[in-house]
Length: 229
Image (cartoon, rainbow, N blue to C red; front, side, top):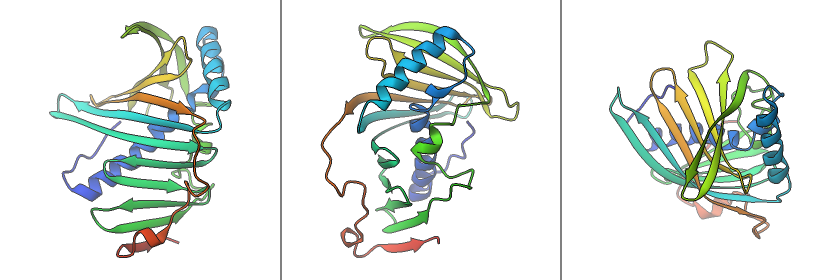
């Protein structure tokens, strides 16, 4: 993953928020791959069954970005709540809400809300539903190492992009052998960038208000509303 690192606040946070969404939903998407490794396929199928059995999923996560060559070492925390196609993501001071039709990106530092419609034909548009088919093709995968992390057995599955133009060298997906929940996801770029998303807490079927995924403009009376369409 090649990142254009800037120190500008809202802009950099917005860039990083856009990047965290695909990584987050890769956590729940890589489970629909075509069989290449029977053991890996069987484990991914178990993760799929677990994820699909939940009405809602709420996770707190840690996101680390490292590149020794560029002297980059950044850690951030965030959380996301998902229900079907809808989600609310809080990351680096930015809130992103997707209600199933429109995406609302709220940047308090700039006092701005950007509203955009979801276009299914847009290849760059990212939603949980699109991410569910993200890994259907374009990757070779196999079982990798198993590690003991504070008493938890974490089995890694390695995914290697088949497209030579892909900037990622490989992706490692760590799965808790006992719970069949995702523990972490590691992306290793060809230019030395390593991004790691670690799930700190994983809660399911939590009660949510009926307006949890609804943007309320009244909460942001002084914000500039930027409607892209």
